[in-house]
Image 1 (cartoon, rainbow, N blue to C red):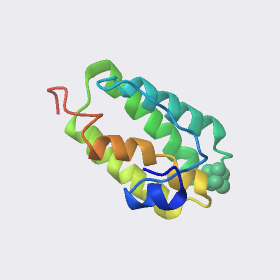
Image 2 (image 1 turned 120 degrees about the vertical axis):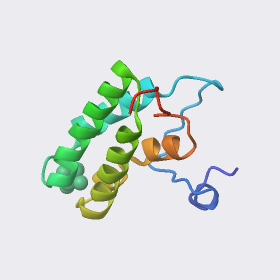
Image 3 (image 1 turned 60 degrees about the vertical axis):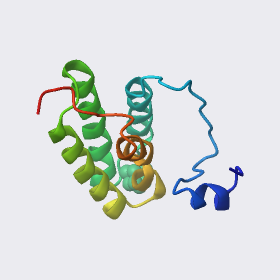
Image 4 (image 1 turned 90 degrees about the vertical axis):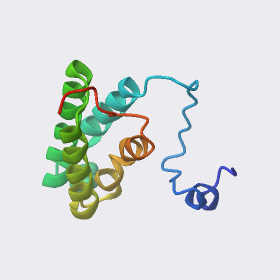
Length: 117
Ligand code: SF4
């Protein structure tokens, strides 16, 4: 696909800040998603609650999922958090902080049930 705003939009993705991460097929994504969550938690300026609290909650959720395996409740909570952050954050950082994670979950690349629920 072309690395352009139009090209990424056509496949339901976003170009974001233009960072491209290339991972080998079958790579465990959870560690990468946790690093992204930590990045957004650090970068949140804290002005609005959905982003300030949401980025912390997402990072905590991923840490729990890494410890004991992800559950259906994790996916439901993540979906709720993402929706609130997208709808109610003031700027693009909070609105897109969970985009990569949402995408990974939708494609069943991350947070697939670890047996518990
Ligand atoms: S969404 Fe933007 S304004 Fe709100 S806390 Fe995050 S970085 Fe700050």
